[in-house]
Image (cartoon, rainbow, N blue to C red):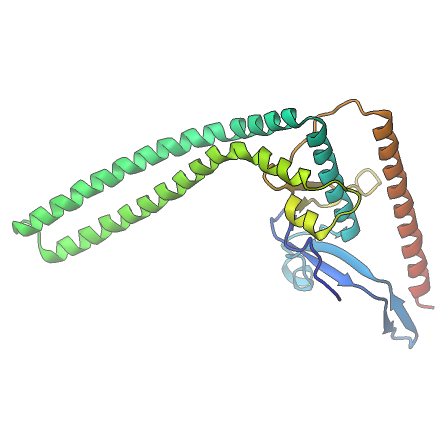
Length: 281
């Protein structure tokens, strides 16, 4: 089957949060129908939710399929990278401002809550130190039995250890918040290493993509529509502000749109032809 799909491990289901599995058959395969006739299956390369398995379909389905072709994921990922990178190249200062502003708004309340909780837990740790010290004194003067001391001290020390671990974790998150102002600069550094955004390469996937979240397809309008969220390293799901496109940009976007439409039509014709060939007589 060749090398592993570079998107594997980065694609997640929007509903259950599970990873999506890559299903790939790189070559045409043949199978024999019960009527004795030999048919062939076309190559395939797609993703579906890992909790949607044959067992789950038959007995206790945990999630729906969330089927999406790998080619579509690659196209959307490249488009997201190209769009954000284009904005960085056009308006680097505005990009930095937006990333830092969004980060500040998102994290301000969380940081306040973390600081309040750290102060409260540190106060409790100090109280426990005083309590444990008093236990030692009571044991030394005979006011407390050794058995009772062992029971109480073990309980207080366990609580103290849990609090210290919690404080360390909260402080680490706060430290990350302070470092978040550097995220825009880190993303810009990646963008500046690339000049060609016409093809999605494995190195681009590694450097740009944090994760891809796939929603279930919606067919309520009569057309199959599917939301896919692309999260980029350091900046997450970044929304590029609308701007007045130049004539050259409009022409490029129209050319890409026409290319996508031709590809979709060709795919539909191909699969329709395969279904007709594979249909039992």
